Image (tube, rainbow, N blue to C red):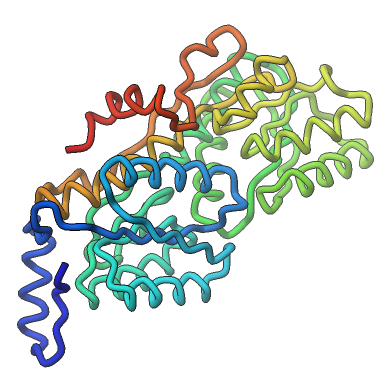
Length: 333
């Protein structure tokens, strides 16, 4: 596909061409081979990796080649990844948000190269230049759902919040939503909040430290199911497993398995598989059909516990559940 940026064009023409792009003009020709780039946060992050797998699965079904680059959480590497994709002249780019400030940079670079860009996982900053769409959990709503569930299921409890990495926009939103629910329902006391790197090891460490410090709590809210694994291990080591309730977020395969086994008491399920499918759909239909999706597309939040496991939507996109997932997002044209 020819790009909107051609050597020798003046700035005015560049702006005009990109204006056509953002208005929904389709540049792909029929049967043209497309290549989409994907800039991850980190494939080591379970949530991110499942989104990538869904993106790749949908691309394969539509005959689109994918180039997935993993900056491993490094902001400078993320910028280098964008430069790489621009050099390769990909037809569209999906970016898994790291920080709102980086989103501005990514959009500026994509705009200058005339490449359509979508974001996922967190809403970009308000001053982010033109982009097609963003699909994400409303993380404050997930935090709120967790707080509401804990208030209703465990009134009078003392809550220990094992939080994700500080400084990230999604972490702040989780915390805001949780505090809103705790203030609104008022039946649970938050006794401590400890940050982690989103991983199981740090979650285990902060839980062990809390136990050794003598902190009194009977419910833990872990910010994802990977962290919940570390929390549960710490509780087992201290002989507190089963005495302290554990609530997480995600609804991934391991999390649902833990719920089924009775290790995890509940999880605020958000099907990240749909996130990967939707960000692909936004790029694909914009480029091939000129369709402009909603600027922000939220994922559903489904509290899952042992008695309603059948309501969960799988993170794993397989031949069997792909059609179900497509039905949920209205298909991909």
